[in-house]
Structure formats: C-alpha cells, structure tokens
Image: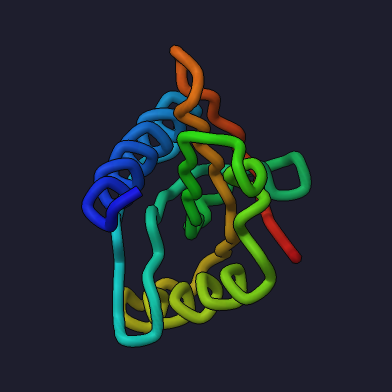
Length: 128
C-alpha cells in the first residue's frame, strides 16, 4: 500500500474511532497533536466515577491503529511498549501546554476495515 493510501486509511480509522468514542460519551478535544517527539492521534475528555462515588473528568490520550487486512496481525497487535511510552511522553507535553493537572490515561482503539461494517475495539488504561 502506498504512503498516500496508508494516510487515507489512517485518517478514516481515526474518524471512525472518534465517532465511536463520542457514541460512548467521550468529548474529542484534539486530533493529531504533534511535536518533534511524536503524535497523539486523539485526545478526549470523559467522566469516570472516582471510587464509585463522584464523577471526575479525565483526559484520555488515544492511539488509533487501523488495518484493512489481517496480514501481520490485528490492528491492536501493532501497538507496542515503545508506542505507548511515546504517547505518554506526548501526553506530558500536552498537559504542560494546556496546564492540565487532572487525571490522564492512555487508551488504544483498533479499527479493522476488512469487513463490510468496520470492527472497532477499545482498550482503556493500556499498560504494555
């Protein structure tokens, strides 16, 4: 697949992932946040229960992996320790830039486009 085709596929996957997260109640507040150290595909806000009692807003840094074939594995299998660490570092940069001092986490969304209806899977609080 050409670089241009990969970019188109990646953009479609990120759009589908953002729509999926919005349906789950997330608010997308950033896309393709980049610096010389890397990129975060999506940045979202969501509310979670803190110890089951009160809702707390957190910022979620989302790595999206999109594939059109199962050659070389599923989309979510393409996210390794190095990539998660890069997203965490970029998350720290984002927090400093936007003065966010609340809770954060890293999620992964895998988008598989080989089916008629795209298959999307979401993993919260990823640690590899």
